[in-house]
Length: 416
Image (cartoon, rainbow, N blue to C red):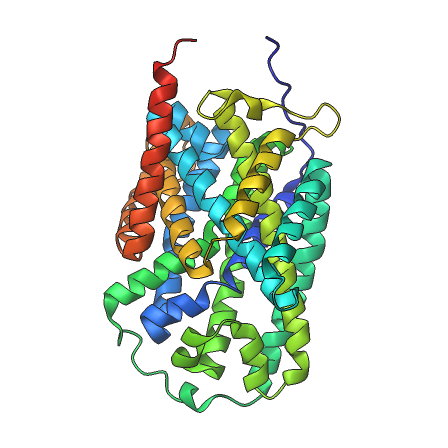
């Protein structure tokens, strides 16, 4: 049997940074602050700092590993190479299931802002279909559309924050009180929710087989994208807390819309809704691309069905993997809840990065770019944030991971 062809290297540094920023900003700004405020109040600012530290440690581990293994699959490949087949499988499976749930959530966020009443699920499914089609016709089209969406989202965020700073505030925002009033458990739980917002840089690593000069480009793109996203989150979080206050923020289904409305600029609400829709599309576009390529890598090693190994002869994309992912996401759209999806996604992604940190710790000195202390801090941080996620997210995550392990046990015992 002829080996499937490799993917083409077409992405430069700017392309990779934009894909990472688009993944993070789209997921975090419009989805994570409300649940984080619900468990930590103003302490979400501390939670954001904790999440950023853990994310930075994970990002440096991913960058170091991607420079040595510039191929599709991200931590699935790194775990297999550095720790063995089973840790690699757990990482890959955790990524696929967590990000598939995230895709459904992002499609629903998009539909919630643009769909007429009663048509949310239909519009979400149409969005998945449209973006899968964009990905099908090549990764350069994915990068181009992501650039347009990122620029639109950043423009909307700058407008919203500026209007919030020049308008009035909710009475509940007067005096935020102690940042630790809800306790450190709540702060750590908020960090788990907010970590969901930083997970986009994983998409850069999973696209490693399509990046030009990956040994230099991927590490620089990961760290740059993370820094840009952190700056955006910090500014938006301060603005939301200053104008809305922790209680109103916690109960809001559209925090940035409430931000401009409370500040006395209701005319800007449609613009913010447009920005939210564009952000969700940007995150969704990168999610579909990343899941498809991790599925491709897993299928190449028989950890997923070999049907998914196909690469399109003309467009050089894993078209069967992406179509399969899209079909699963469309089914999940009918049953997924946004807040539960964030918790479940965080469970999968934190497990994924735990394997990444352990893999980077195991690299030899020739390929080491960052001190081992960062990998130790990252590993401990992943375990702590995992343990503080909502009980439902932990329970569902354990069950779904166990199902994947059961599938692989059957596969490895089958004769070739």
